[in-house]
Image 1: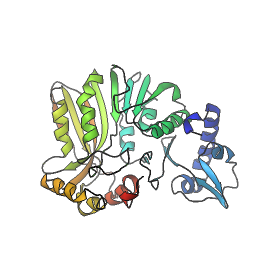
Image 2: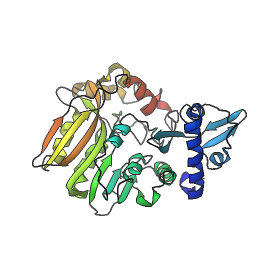
Image 3: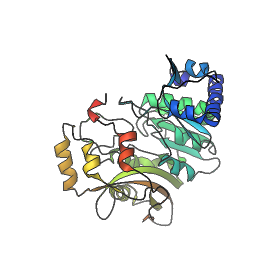
Image 4: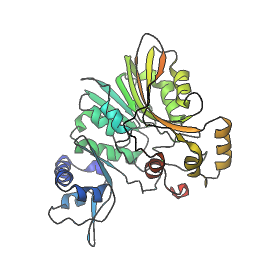
Length: 341
């Protein structure tokens, strides 16, 4: 049964059971929904979780069928990082998305657009203040998860989920606030890769297509926020060139906040993850020819101003233990990229 077909009563009961596990038996919650381990549960009847497909019974206990990430009293259903299917729903965690959620520039009564909603996490948090949220995604499986997550977190009446590529399914409506975490990963040409992260050869294909049209859907207030990975060469990350190209005629202030204490060299760790791709040698040569040597991640805040300007803020230092290699391998890339189906 698709998750989006779970009714309100079932979702409410599921939320109650998840709360009980998360608050009272976190070790079992973590084992089931974050570590994908077989777990014995004797003190709680989890039949409802089994009925709607969140867990499955095995010989010596239960096994989570999906990853369930909890943030600020909300539960978000995604896929486990171990799933190598191309339509995998991004295994959300607090790194990056959490920073954006904590700094949402949203006002009470806003009409919001969430582009590439994935699990629906941004739409769900925006719905706390918004009058209405429209959330789009090209991946039907992601929308199935997102609709369930909206019901699970009791905001389904505020969010409309639409299937389409970026603005494809949207009428000529204007939005007070636009938010997105576009597919950001540089990927060799013609290589099968996750829908949620395939940003094309330089990692900016989807972001560029988004920015080229985004002003047509923004109110004069022009409030937008993004999380975006970017290749980088001296002196600036690639996304600055794209922001200038697409928005330089608009009167906006663009603030970039590097999210992590240090950027990561693309070689050897990042490039090595793609070395089995058919077009890897040519792709690698092109990146080097263009001068890209680093990979960095940014929180981007855009709002109306008297003139166009871009400001790069000081690097955040609140995640000193952040491990780029571990994150790229666990949440974005499988160990062997040729296994993606």
